[in-house]
Length: 159
Image (cartoon, rainbow, N blue to C red; front, side, top):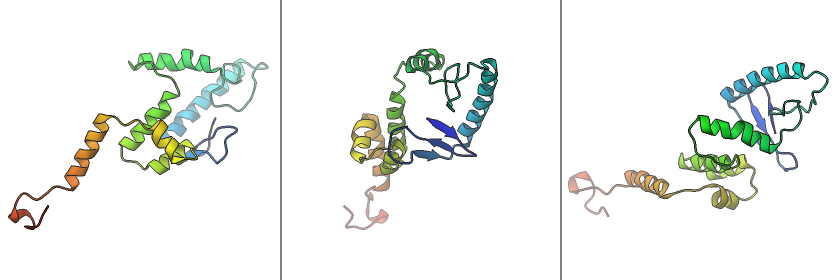
């Protein structure tokens, strides 16, 4: 579930402990506000039949959207229009996690964002680092710890 406050996007999942994740994402907040205005127009069209459950992404009558409708009417067409391969909606969580770590962000912070109680779940299940990621990491590491090439560039005792 998702609610939009002033300049903060607040996410939480019913039935889960903890406070959920809070993110200061002004672009997303603005997009959701515009979505809310369109939603209010839809509400007027379904006057009397609208089930107001205060959902951000309801079905056409305000109720809970079925996952199949979300997947086949909205998500899959967006992937096709963008020329992206077919993936499960849930795979985006894994993609986000991998991109987060590859960009050098903190694993423990990612654990908190995802709401995991164990960092092992975050690292072992959600982050998928391939050979290219390992190679980039080793290149970054190597740039920071280069061995001097001669006495003029450093100590004679350099390793």
